[in-house]
Length: 66
Image (tube, rainbow, N blue to C red; front, side):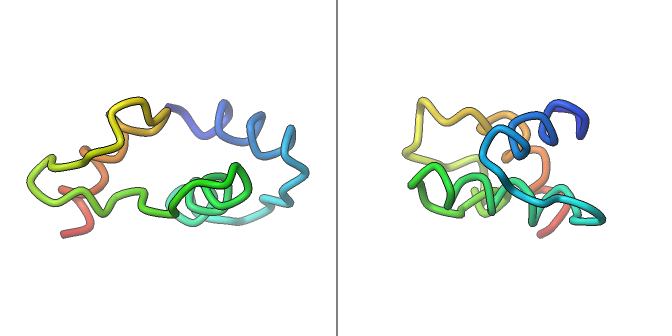
């Protein structure tokens, strides 16, 4: 998901995102939605959250963060 789309979601939740990096912003959105702030923590593409909105980006980012 591109940052512009993520900012729209953040704005919808009332999150102030100015200068917040993508990783931190997504984790903040996850917490605001009542979910785990687990973005980019899926090691070896292993995750039990099958319906997560961030799933594809999560796997990609997890490889970069590791």
